[in-house]
Length: 234
Length: 185
Image (cartoon, rainbow over the protein chains, first blue to last red):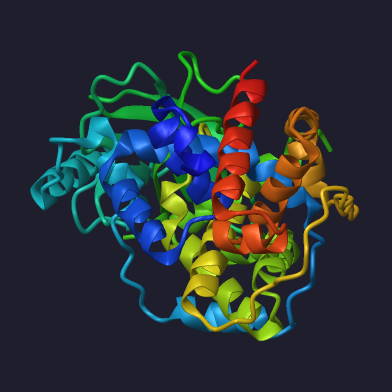
């Protein structure tokens, strides 16, 4: 009997996750693990935990500059229309059962316009639909005519999640998100845009993250980004 | 600049990538491509294979950025995991020459000067991991390091360390369980 048979079964699922992350499994076993990853959230969490545990081993790898043309090859590939596949968040429990019909989004858009007091056809405001990466819009946001505030209308429900929902604005060309404040899951809300950002909303990215009650303690997103989108003219 | 800045910038850039912002992907690339290329090159031991995989990695990041959860994973760990998985899959499916040099238990961990991002981000986690690896038998730790860095299978590791397959599996599995126990202390 070989020694490997003596490992206690208690290590089972976690051990397979660890072996996958470590990289010792063969092609067939890796495919089996990937199938489980897609179907078993608990197992996927176990793999994520092992990635965090062992990730530091990569620090022993010497960085190596990729060839100068590597970026242009990547850029060319992503410039082609890409089918953005369904992502993990579709499996997040709180989205379950709240599939978004396009009618809901349309209603939210009209609600946003109504809230702004704009008739359809008035001067095009800056608007964004904030989606979850799979083409599902979850919020609609619009900058008011004055440019000093932003109306956010949820197009879906977030339930059973005690975390606060915080809205962030990232001006075009910048990487640091700025908090616009907390939004409510079930009702439209008007948020003031800080004066230094008021003129920089065109093409800015809006992102929604889940945060501890009261909002991010650090001033930067700390929880998962559940929706994002760009502010553009209608 | 505060110590958390590189990490939060990477998190913000990934949020913009999730929104379809190509310029943000470029920022992520500039910040992480040398690390990820090093990871791919180490596993594949072949520049042109590593270049192909690197391209694949950032296209994957472009498509899957929305799945990144900063509450669960650090951005560099998430990116390294994508790179390692892509490189290992390529290694398993191709005729890339396998690395077969012996592994010595006494092999020093190579210690390149780490990039700014991982220096800040991994420093603490790093020290704990290094401490826990030291609690393992030297040959267990050497096998685990070689497996992670080279993406070697149990069979290859057994051959490289000249031990039976069952012994290698036992070393690594016991080593992993001990590591987990140590890291959770």
